[in-house]
Amino acid sequence: MNPEQFVRELQKHGIELNETQINQFSIYFKTLVEWNEKINLTALTSEQDVYLKHFFDSISAAFYYDFTKDVHICDVGAGAGFPSIPLKICFPNLKVTIVDSLKKRIGFLHHLATELDITDVAFYHDRAENFGKNPQFRGTFDIVMARAVARMSVLSELCLPLCKKDGVFIAMKGAQTEAELTDAESAIEQLGGAINDIHTFYLPEENSERSIVLIDKKRKTPGKYPRKAGVPNKNPLA
Image (cartoon, rainbow, N blue to C red; front, top):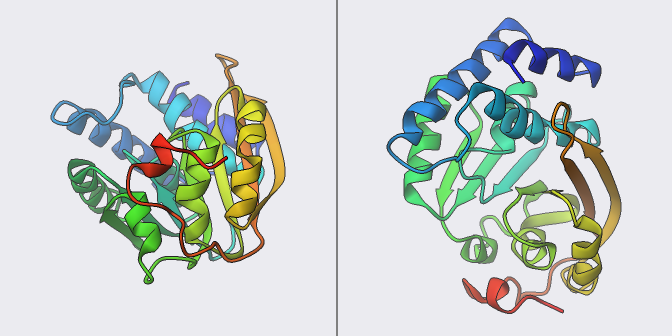
């Protein structure tokens, strides 16, 4: 997917990019490739792959959820800024907080935000488990997002504690989402969530399966969650 195709595909979903936004994506791509030579940010470095599998894929959450409101997103394990920075470019009204466990990636994101000239973005170097215990952040976000970070039973424990009551956790997944959700159903309930909807679609051009999972935060998450760093991954809630 080249930049022109990217713009056209977004138009099909009602997302119109202006020249400033188109230029921001161009800067994002160049900055990503440049920094990727110094630190490992992505295995995908061709323009076609980045625009399709990172930029378009990240924005696909907006095909199923309204990001035009003034809401605060927490992006857990965003790596090189996916999905929240592409969404922020498309919807400048968004307030974005990113937490990532690798300090070098946080350094890249600070630099990227300056290059893109975006505001209302904050970056934190921390483990999601520790971040979710911090009273400054716990239960404060309208939307918590994660893209391809971990399986649903683990992801729910990292993300739902950060969601405010009546907020939403949006998980961006690939294939086998239904099976993951079946395994995670009990964990989601324990953490105060309830599955709202699952939207499955296929990326243009390569037709790989993607799913957007919307989980409502119905109740406050019990204080014992998330457990200590590393425990959710080693011993997922059942």
